[in-house]
Image (tube, rainbow, N blue to C red; front, side):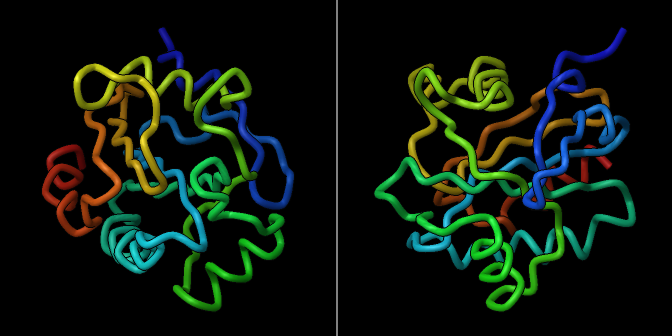
Length: 160
């Protein structure tokens, strides 16, 4: 039986639709990102995780979001260019999404239900909230925005 996450469809930053089933048997680190946030330098650490673990099965997946302080005002082309030029990002980036509210993307509805945050709150609190998903599609952990990517390396290593 397939894990529910694999049935969710997403659009990449170039507007191509993908089913998350394409990432079956991979460890996924799913992050809501923003270009004008105090945590934006985490792109560098996320890229380092991708560089270190991709060959072993890690996919880092960035989902730009403009719901927190309007810190992701750009369009997809501007976001992709910013990430590549400033942080050398070459991990998969996706279409800008809402992560909270009635228009929240189905992926984020699923993630926040599967792994609520502090005090069992489902809402995403800020940019760079990170969800770690194992090779079977189970949401293993939710990391706060201020958790540095390097601090997640050990948890990723265990799943690889």
